[in-house]
Image (cartoon, rainbow, N blue to C red; front, side, top):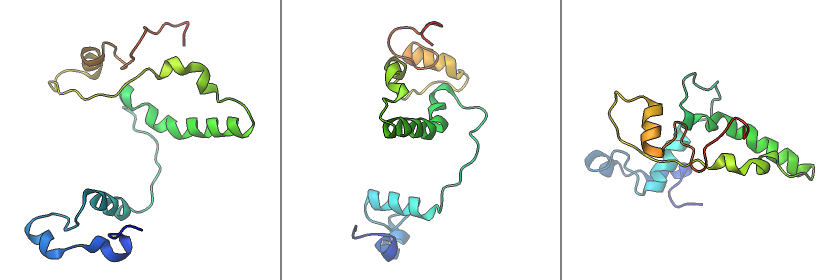
Amino acid sequence: MPLRNKANDYLIDRKLQKTKSYTGIKGVSEQDAAVQDSQGPVARSPPAKHLGPTDLGHPAFPETGDDCARALQQGQSPLHLAHQDRYAVRSGACVTHKAKDLPAVMVERFGDATGFVGRPRTAAAE
């Protein structure tokens, strides 16, 4: 159990909070934990309608994990292992002009509108 935790209010130092630190909590990890704990239970809602190509994996991840777990429970290899080439995508930051649309930025940054790295995808590979 960490020294600073929810039970002891992360040892908030009100004087420090008033004079130097917005949170009054010492330690970045402790500040992060306090923020997470203060959010309450996770509310699930439908994904936003305008996700960019780099965001599409977020809503699909839990289902993918569940599919893999079910396959392993049944003694099978997860289907996703057969398509490892589809995971040749990398993250990255890019500061650009706000007038550029996302596909143009992705091409500029990664050379592909979807952030794909490696050999070009073809319709047959899908």
